[in-house]
Length: 197
Image (cartoon, rainbow, N blue to C red; front, top):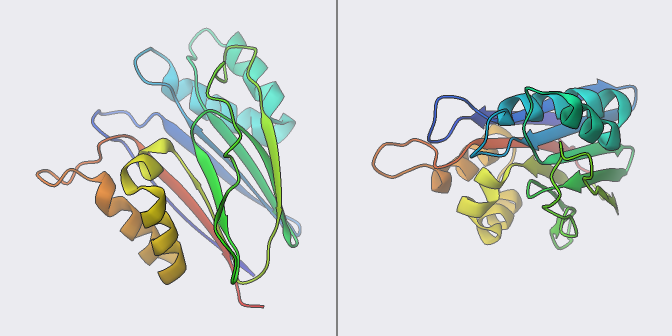
């Protein structure tokens, strides 16, 4: 059995420009996560559209659809499919997918991705990834508002010690401003975790 937990919140402004979509399929789980590019209009629209189209038609179609939408700006995009004991997907940008296997070193599945050209340019390059999963495992899909403030060492430490909502909550701590408790950037994380072997 696979358990799914998620959390998303705006950081530093009123509109959350992150988007994510989770689909439970027969014998599989699909996740798409996008982080709309700040500093220009249409980031939130680009992220939402990218997730919706990627779920139906794949990431390359998402790039084309976002580029064709006059209300959409640019975004990152990670797509992930967990089917049986395999995680496969593709990514463009600086959002991330990471996996932690039983008794194995954690791995950033999206480590080879390119940030530019972004999704919505019509020229985005999606780098595929694949990994065998050994239960009990955890897979995290996250926007850069998670990993750039939490740091990879903190992500690995939390994933090794914690599960479920407790893990998701602990990742939020370093991303919040100490004075106000607000997030420093849009923050989105999706956690999928398996039962034991």
